[in-house]
Image (cartoon, rainbow, N blue to C red; front, top):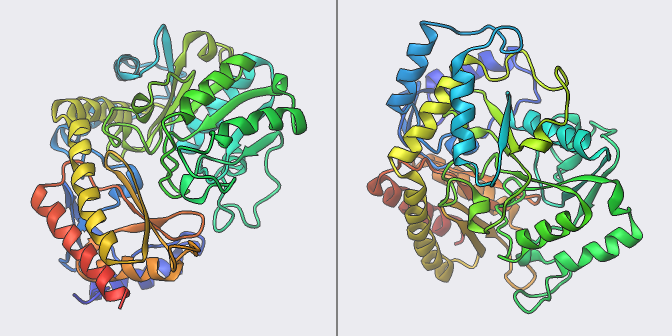
Length: 437
């Protein structure tokens, strides 16, 4: 197909005149409509969506119950600001989030608008509770684009370059990136150096009594869909409990069915103290949340957290409808089936294409790390870009990730049909064959 089409080209010209250069575009397309796992651009070209709004559309594009809930709410109340005049939808969604959050005991909720805001508020809450200031984050992490969140994030370009200085008292620890182990060890015979490092870290870098929070993505997303060993998260929980550190699970990309469970921490049997949620919480409406233990969530006093648009009535209505839809359609179980099927196909491709160095997955959160040589593991960034462009030419939109730009990531809507999934993987196979000649 010809991309971009004439209508998209005209819109690109208009966009270039009025939109800041810092807003990048992964494809030269303007989408007009979408449903399920399919998108149609303004020129009538149809695409299979394998990126899901970067993890926002686990429930698919425009799920009818969510659209209906938004329409109904919009006819009654669009905005008041909950901090001034309250409304029932806020409470309805909060009660539902508490019901599905995998943390025992009494929980409480607060809303903001984006994943980065949820992260920053979780850190604020942890600092208020512990009366400490330090924060531990992990290499390869992505936690957002605001100042504190950028300090927690690892990828320099394009997220951090030229934007410093960042918030102080953030300490980075090597993550459990087994394919590129910081310690040049091999799992499972490695002794879990990624956990052992904390003893040295607390002796050499910072005393644990000053650390308020430790924040971790159960699967690191933008960092390359890095799935840690089964011992890693439980080990972090033990370390946090030992030193009175609030453990924050950043479930912004991993939550709401993506990994085969409602939340990724359930795959590891770990209960964090706080959880940040966003992206697929409301099927595309801007909403995020911090959910956690009552005694921690209640540490800030009245007026110390919140925001004008936080928990907007439309977003809350969409959030409740989205969660009910995910449960009704059993999308967590569907994610597990999608993951097993896709990984099976990818292993077959790995036998044919030496570009595929590593395949990582937890449910339907799937990454393929591309390398020029399997022995040296030199990142194949250019080939990754070529494959995503080849897929686009055949009607499959798929995007990259990783600090080296060499990971193909898959976040297809969980409502994708078997036929659409098969067709997309055939395109991906064709793209690998085209690039690796």
